[in-house]
Length: 381
Ligand code: FE2
Image (cartoon, rainbow, N blue to C red; front, side):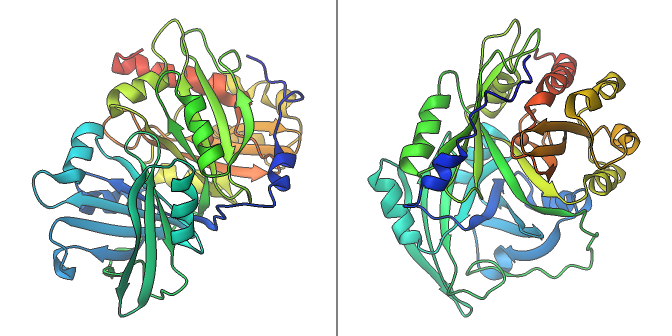
């Protein structure tokens, strides 16, 4: 594997040139997962990840077909939704994919314009712009399809002062474990099928006005067995970054292929969340039972030769199994959880950037070998 960064095209000039951003995005508004049991999932994200109780919608708010819990930690907002009836779209989603991300909602100033700009460039509409209101004001939402059964909802909320969205009530809970220092979503990665990476990168470029940041090919990211290809798409102001992975030919089954098999198609592979202090955050997460991928101690023997000087002592990073990588602009610290669901599908990345704007390419080989050990134990390598 190559860890040379000098010939990587970050494409930043291209982004800063994009003065005419037809789809200005303020950030990620929320991420909604369809899950088998929202009440228990909410408990998990509070207990294990330090999310706070924010809002609720269900039978008590007049909703008959679903229950949703909204949790938040700093700028990261998670919505967990379960069906209340047999049949229907949510049940079908869970039946096919297991628990997983249905909605990546994007915060915009004008949800009608966002829908028009994207659908006129070829996006498939999920729903047309619509107003939702209650006593706290008005929200305009619209939505388009992206890879697999995942959708983007555009949320315009400048005329709304309620706790989340119309129809939700404040969720008061006596059980409020402390946050762990997670700040915002750094990036969200999609896994797509064989040969589909370019198609979806083109979708983000043409339909949503994103530009490509970094590209890897299968020679960059491969171990003895597994391989993948990945491209990173970013919106104009850089607040939204979507790496897209596809499987590549290896001696055995790629981790991306394993994901596609268990998810039954394309979907969100991981949500990377940023912290200002990864040592404290990861120590806390571990104490709360969050399981992480393991890299062997040998990783730390020569890591400083590769990445140079860092501010942190190596020992706590080694104790917590945190990985380090460097690019032209600085370095980053990162670690990956094991899948947080029964199926080997979605997981989280915890990341602290110290200047670096890349995604930890130098760690991929160590990580893949770690994932392969997990696949081996699942009999899916
Ligand atoms: Fe990542």
